Image (cartoon, rainbow, N blue to C red; front, side, top):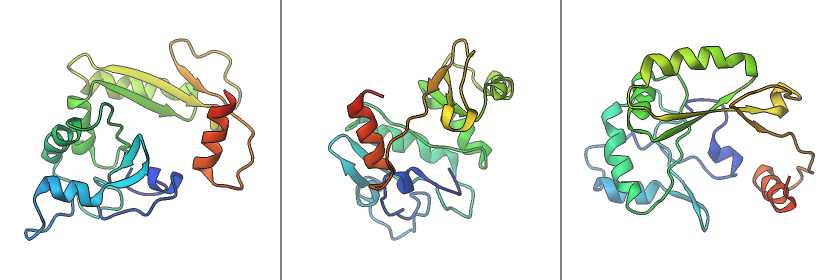
Length: 169
């Protein structure tokens, strides 16, 4: 994402400067990644590559970032919007799989067209609808549905998600 809410907001963490904003006198790239990593829990860290950036990101930054992160992390999840098409398309090219979040099952046609035009290496695409926005989903063949759950939100979204996962819902 480049604007609006980010995963940092969801996990109630401060949003560090985008990694794309690197000055010439900045430390070595690997050290910069470690300094800007935001620790969430024992199995989750966050890194801001472009959120809040006012300039386009050089899409070539993605491969070295993924290489460095893959030394330590088994899974790397990237939240990316459509604002910077070059960055998005580079991510598509180097990914193994994509989970695309849709507001409605009717949005699948637009997603099909986007992925058909840009995906060339046989990457796996998963279509996900969130019932919180789409309402009850009755027919979504081949897609995944995130069910709406009713849990108190007094402790924040991250705690709410944890309680939902513990409850099995």
